[in-house]
Image (spheres, rainbow, N blue to C red):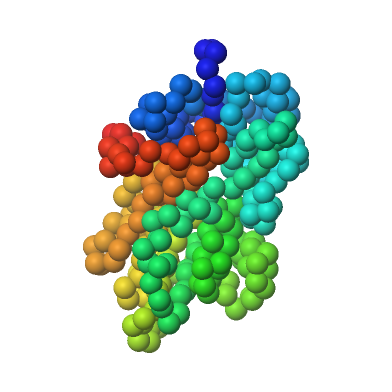
Length: 284
């Protein structure tokens, strides 16, 4: 280990993480003498890990990935209200001798949507597939920006619980399996309406089962957003593009949430002037 300031990402497993590539790319471009590492931390070692880091003056914080995003919360001194509301922490930083938890998924998810959110719409509707921690961050982000959110999940009770956490309405939850079959639902005039379909699950990810979604359930002119980034072009995105719909891949959220964390770790904005080069590195 070197004697320079460092941040890191922790998880179990962790070898798949692209966070070191992203942060070290930015550190080099910014000319910051620091490092970003990946640390394999098992659930039973989580408390020991943070106690050790509390005593390390070179430590600038960590990103938190599966399966620690909820478990870490009870080990922190303070949790940012947004992270408390989401119920998950993905960024921990030392502040005045205290460990503080944040959630940058909210910001990262919204980043590629900003040009659309700056427009005026008669109505905004999001169909969110999933009911886990990522789904909650996405749902809260979209709800805060005026979307009516439908939660679609394999576990209907979890979908109801997610809806209830920000605005109870059992009419706006649905089981995923009904979306695998075609529908003859006649969508009304969607002019002036922003429709968004978001996959927050691992379905469609490399090594996972496919996401079975018949596009007859997708309104015309929808934006398709898949937070999966391995593969970068998921079957959901590929079919959306083939139908002429705008598609947003998971690297946008990954890089966006990393940028928000980078500034907390190193006190400077991430240098975003070479995002195209960074994306090329991440998909190589």
